[in-house]
Length: 364
Image (cartoon, rainbow, N blue to C red):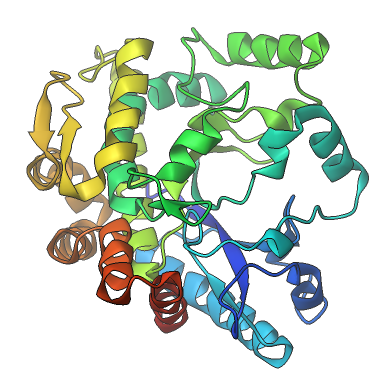
């Protein structure tokens, strides 16, 4: 029987003034109204993060995500602010560019300058528990080829600096500028992974192992593999979908590693980077590169094919019904990027796209 590994979710939210619909640096004021557990600050004072308790059942994962979101909304209302779960905001505002106080954030701002200054982006990270770090490193590298469809499903950042970026996920491109971002490996085992992290710290490029920003990474604090490729998603159901798909991918490849089977997906770093770029540009509305052939396929067709490939694993985990239903719903409504562009196009107002994100984040 395949092990049903606990899943944890980190979500980042942009804080916006409910009158102007622009970013506002009131995350700290919101955090003062919230418990310490489950909520934290980020580099920019207009961003707040939630951290869920690891759960095995996806329905429990969803309930936890909704609970944390509702607490954020309740904390913001007396302050006249709301939160949006999206990779970027359609209506930025210069007042949103304010660093959170603290030694670590001061180091980031002084060392990385405009990379840190433009860090007004939000992601959804999913953790899957695994104790064997050697198996984790090998399985994660096999999963990387399958990440672009997950990025496409999450794409929610078509706007950058108040303009249409031409990408479904401008956040993905902004994030890739960090020196340790991008595909994982190649690594033969956990020892090589750890040596590389130590060498990066020793080089002075990063301060500590917590600044390893691979698309998939071994957590520095807990026995998990963390997926970092996705945008924040306004709809809680899409986050649950990503969690279910990622757990299935990791579970399948963990067993394949333990059986000594060769990988089936693309392993070449140049093509992995190209596939992520394609997903960031097109989202669900264009074409994605197949994780097996690296040839372009319409995104809905590729997501459906991936579901079929994962069905035996999802069924064994007891997740097939919920994941297949959520995937079909996501494909029918299209990406958040497309919905935001539609809202903007009605009257040419960024505020309308912000209102859509506020409503979707709130409804959960």
